[in-house]
Amino acid sequence: MARAGRRPGQTETREKILDAARHRFAELGYDGATVRGIAADAGVNAALLHHFFGSKQALFAAAMNLPVNPATLVPAILSGPRAGVGERLVRAFLSVWAVPEGRTPFIAMLRAAATNEQVALMMRQFIERTVLAEVARALDVPKIRVTGIAAQMMGVALLRYVIKLPPLAEAEDEEIVALLAPVAQYYLEGRETVGPPP
Image 1 (cartoon, rainbow, N blue to C red):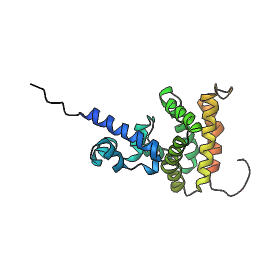
Image 2: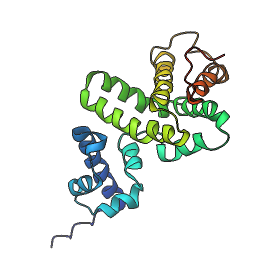
Image 3: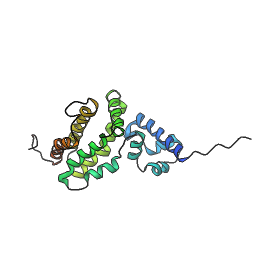
Image 4: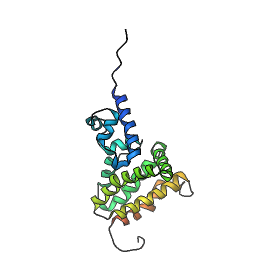
């Protein structure tokens, strides 16, 4: 007598959702992939995605194996006095990249984005929608200023963790914070003057 098949458990269902999400995000980008479409591909109800992940942002972070969810990172950066946002932003960035399990997924995506337009589109839409736009809106500054900070931080990541250029690669976190926090804060002040920070 044949045994009845075991019903899929939570782990199996979660993995099916993540697999469907990876394919949808890769094919359609962050904006084009919908929760409903991912659920249909996974053969589950869309409510299950919210049960397991809570939001599209969190689902993307899990599907791409990102070590941080912008839904929690961005509010942490924005909480507290405005005068300290630049420093909190730099410290948050360094904390994510400080350990291999944090930086490895980002490095992999950076390398892939350099040669694959779909990956670049996916990263571009995700970062723009979930981080840059949120910070710019909360602080009421032009998005170009927040994008400037992001460009600077990604440049530091490339030189420090991928190319490992000295002395940046050997610098202590506090040295990086002292170097970059005033610049990040300058971007966020919303001044229209041109020139380096004082």
